[in-house]
Image 1 (cartoon, rainbow, N blue to C red):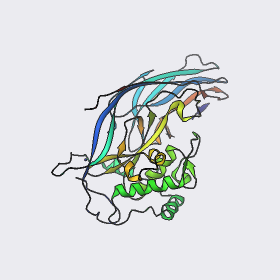
Image 2: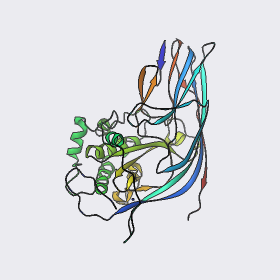
Image 3: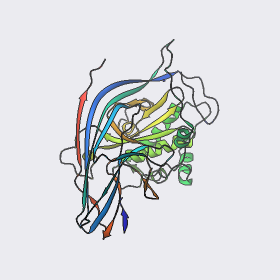
Image 4: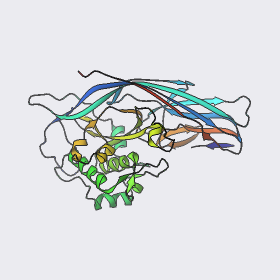
Length: 351
């Protein structure tokens, strides 16, 4: 029986040549180092597991984080998942010599990294922009595509874009369009966290409340639908658990999702719809190109394609829980046991 549990800017527009705009670059600075340890346990009581197959994230090097090192126990092996992005993940497989009821597996992994703060700034007179690598063909294809969660080609989402007038206009700067999308999210949604909510863009656009994931699906979907490459950064705030919080609270595992948009000549530009939503005393444009350097990114974007034997499965997130499959006998009743989140942060002196 098998069971699974779960920096000069060359603007891109769709509607014609862009108007002349000030050139920009991303100003980045090392803000803090972090050492975060996440521990998991998966248990069964009525199912005798003969093999555990578990996927964990492997934190990537990104514009927002560098000098990233991940260690794990069990160490597992590093694999590329099966989407166009071929994101690196960690696979742990354990065969049980004598299967018995009340099976369990415990895992721990630690990520050490330096987090950067980032800010979009105008180039000074005579300042040369830094060289920025273009997206590969596969990256560009993926980051404007409609996917399972960022399903911008669905009729419901298209109707939402038209109703909210979220179509890139002739000569409109991509940054200004991003701010218009944030305006809509601010006006139409209240923040509500539900870890089990269906956050797909086509569903979130019909609601009046959602969380950071839902807001990012809306934002990224709107940009992709207008030909602007965009993606999600999935991770955890680098702060300890909130005292008294439970697994149903955001302050327990500190999950967060942030977005980025790619602009030729500038690179990946951070945008956090949730931060923009929470600070309505400032114009939305002020939140385009701002990253405080407080998020440990565990993987880029969502819907990782992972394999178990000859079968390919889709893992939406590897942010709070690992994605796993088991072989064995009995009535499957797998559940996650206590999880650990221990984080140590060292601020870096400002230069």
